[in-house]
Image (cartoon, rainbow, N blue to C red; front, side, top):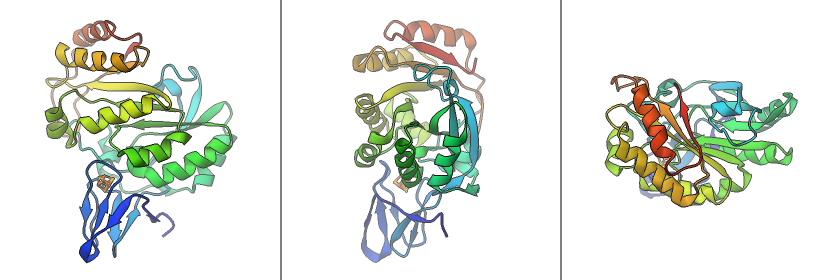
Length: 285
Ligand code: SF4
């Protein structure tokens, strides 16, 4: 199968098992098994990317929709996504492709780069919709080719990736929107089945390499409190007060059915963020 590509980051273990080292889950996968992200598969002691070149969604979006508000404003970008995610957020706003979808159409990196070239006024390629970290090999191959044409590469990511693969990818990436879903490790564990610190490490590393903006979904009864918004804004400001923060309104989805975020709170949250940061934007309002 042309979309089965051997993974770049894993270790072979005893009895045909493998340890995936792409993200902080470090899944130990037995022969015939699949990783937590649903996108990496052990076939006879070799780890394969199941979603290499599989496109579940494709569109040309305004860059502001990523959201990136301070990176080539007013431009358009070819946006593609596959399936799978290495977090399992109870309130996932995009679960049909992050948690459920296994299908799409196949495209080689050359096909995507040609498409990007042939679209007028298109600045490049955004890897978005599902989590690009677990689409790693395809993103890396495509981003390298696209860079050669002088176009931009953008990642819209949860930031849940290990340092070594991230450092290998970063030279080809021009901008990122990184989710900072909360500021409490127990929130990450309970609501997303991940950890906070690896995301903070990703943000710190990327801030030194490319343009970054950060998004926080203001989940009702979890994130919609002043302490959390203030802690996030204050932490970002210590890296750089000019990093934009997008506070996005939550709507009930997937396994979480609390009411949408109160609009009055969203406005208060913007004011709190602006105590520390130069650019705070509200989304989904
Ligand atoms: S990328 Fe997927 S298989 Fe690899 S460690 Fe993360 S969740 Fe597990």
